[in-house]
Each structure stands twice: as structure tokens, then as C-alpha cells.
Length: 122
Image (spheres, rainbow, N blue to C red):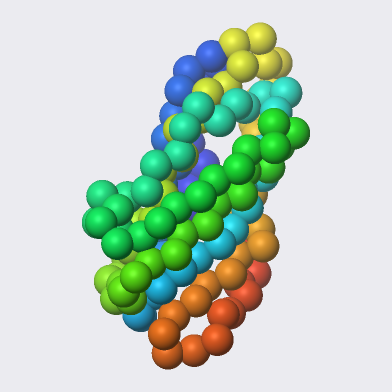
């Protein structure tokens, strides 16, 4: 993902997408952030998967939000939007840059056992 600018004190949205999905039946991952700079306002499942996927999120308030989706049917779409996370930068933050990091990714399908992916930074 290419860097982009976010004004101090403003909200921004990050869409989490599976680049290639073949019979994707579930996904679990963690999104890390610096709570001194960013706060999580909300997360929402993508419209395409809302009808048959059950979602769960837990923000520990210390810089890690865990997100899990379990679907009743497999999704085969490329790319496949999974979740949108809306965040906000602190209006008093005095930084030039910050990172969001996706880690502990687990993908599952009806065709294969769960597969772990490498950690990625946004």
C-alpha cells in the first residue's frame, strides 16, 4: 500500500482486502496501531460479505484490534474487500509519520486447512 497523508485530528478509513480469494470461508488477523497517535472509531464488514459472514472484533485499547470473520459459504472474488476500519489521528500528535501493521493473519476455506500469511505493514 502506498503512503498517503492524513491531517492531524482527522478521521481516515482503511479497507482490508484479500487480493486473491478462492473459496474463502474465514479470516482472522490483528491490526496494530500506536494508541498515542491513532484511535479506532469503528470497523465494519464489507457489504458483499455481510449476508453470510459473522464478524467479531476486539480492540484492546493498547494498540491492537483483533478481527475475525466466519462465513457460511466460500467467497471466490479477486480482490475481495473484507473489512473497513475507520480511525482518527490525535489532534495533538506531533509526528511526521505512523504505521498500521497487519499481523497474525489466518485464512480458511472449505478446500484446505487454515493458512498463515506473513505480517504486512500498511
